[in-house]
Length: 131
Length: 484
Image 1 (tube, each protein chain N blue to C red):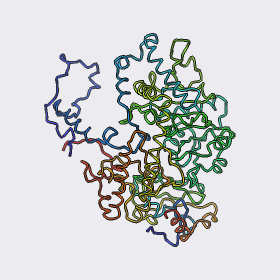
Image 2 (image 1 turned 135 degrees about the vertical axis):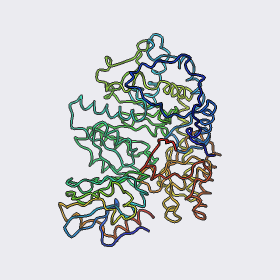
Image 3 (image 1 turned 120 degrees about the vertical axis):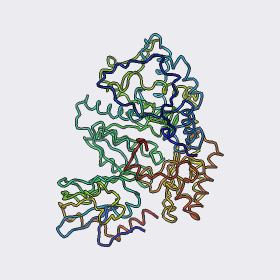
Image 4 (image 1 turned 90 degrees about the horizontal axis):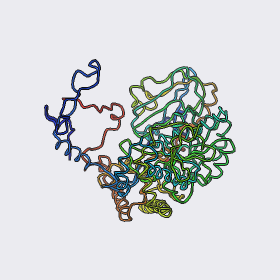
């Protein structure tokens, strides 16, 4: 079973987000997503300063099976992309909610984060997809 | 059987010099540009080279040796007669620069091939010059861009692609300077028309569509889809990847498509693989006729001649020297002449029958079809999500285990929107016995997955090379041999 931390928010397209103390939002892909993709071989995280829009592709993850877009759940300015993923894409497989974070965004609109799925709703969405 | 690399057969000073020039050849290369040390080439005898490459060829899984459920997605069976006639010396000895007057025969063949492709696709014009499917796609979108440029409608640069599309579609659009907008597929396999309606506008150049789609179902609302795109001022591009399913039955031109590329190896049974040579002929509707790539063969009373830039001043230009891969075009021509009009219909009928038979038997055996409420086209999708969830055996494990049973694996993990999927396409040439044997193997593997999953996870067991390390291959690919 995949791990769905209760303190995070999610999107149906399998991104997670965490509101940090400084108001920024850290974004990555869920444990389910990394399991489904399999071993990651390449990650393209956005660079700081880029503006991303909610629902639009902000990063790319490529595994031995497929290349997939990562959709930003919020609009805002990228504060940081995880540079470690360049040399170690496997961090996402090993620790999707920790060292495998992809980007940190300063949101234009705080309500977008609040409207994301909570852990329970995401678990229900996953169950509907896989059964 | 393990086969050593040819470098490992090498011994210093050994060579096969029977065909060396008798007189030393003075290279017309300035001394400064010549390499100082000889290239690192294997040193083997003629017989060693023959045996090495013959043994390697015997390790191949191929259509000539195994059931190959990649189907027309990759390449169909090539009837031997096509090759035999295309190898006639009158064809293979003709020089491409020979004058038209001495080449009326080959020009007639190419002209008739253009006409047959027009007839079977319902398009108004055809150019045979693209050298491969990717180049055909490029030509198709380049013509769309040329069309809008000629109309001074410079805003139309967005190409719409469904999320089930081949990855080449957005890649082609990007290569041609367009932006890409993705629209979703509904759970029933049809395109989401509401999303399409919301996506089109004055920026829409067109939509790239495969029909039947990559999930193996025919788009039921093709007419509404055509209306939405045309009313918004866009054009419709038909990716011919799945033409095998509708050959002689439905025509892209009648569905309202403006441009189509055909992979002749997919539908018209020409060789393909090892990087070519290929053929990606393109067909167009009335409004794109002036933009076709040249040369094209034209007929004037009883004479054939090349049409070039003088005849089509708005052409997107030349994509290759001469006329595409003429040897490949010849094979497609012979294939089509052997089939005739009725034969082409039988191709799509049996391709579809075989696919639906396999799908029905696999479903009865307990496999889950991704779109069970839809009739399959020439291909269908099985999802192994339950097998992966219950027993930890995923689609790749099934695919690798199939090799041990003597079957080439179907396409895995495509299209991306179906989890743990196998995309299975038997094509029209397989016998019922062969199809049954494949189902029996799938049933046996499913039983192993439940009782001895390690048999799948470690597969293949019987091949000269075991499971490859995909991750290392992707991250640290190194194909250069180095002396120990």
